[in-house]
Length: 309
Image (cartoon, rainbow, N blue to C red):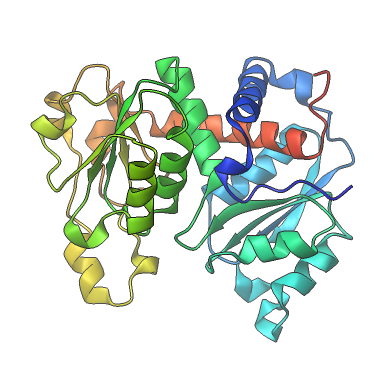
């Protein structure tokens, strides 16, 4: 049988997503129970773009399951510098590993890899397009902290144009009842038109605002902050003009709802002041730990090792 891949969070149905999140919950409660399920298995992490959290999270996830990790951390340390195609690379890697996580600056590159691969391929981020495992992380975090994934008002703040984590989260949460979004960004960094049109077609309530203030945050359940991504800009001047547009600090948190949780896919630059870290509503470092559990559950699911555990 052809392997199953994960290119978009919508590749899993809502029921499949809930089952995966349940498995991640179980792993978080009793990680030792799962510590040898992947004995003898290997994950290849093919990261054509720099990464800290996502690459190490995948490697930690496989090691926590008893497996091993191999791969490269940038295109400069791969045969891509010699002109090798993604298709040829994944054919080779399929002989070495049991599953692969790929990050690539070009949208659709992991999809191309999945076509030629003999092993499951996970999209670990492709350009400004999708980041499905961050979405699984975000959903697990939200469900764990708020107790549900429905009937939530979610503010998304910062770079909503190039932020692949935002695009993936919107498309995935839009399948749950009672979801609404507040899109907080400067005009130049609004969500792409296809994302807005998709929400309209599904009758998902959303509003677009420029300011991050008391009125904007008044009834939010989640505030999802993002950084302005220097690597997505074509010129330095535009980046410098935008990078400090939003800064969440102690003063803003003082007027935020007492139950509002703050998430961030990280890395943080200066869009969340360090002084916010001690606020009990700051959940972004807990989010990192949830990411390991989510990726452990995903590896088990795609390798079909989740049965009976």
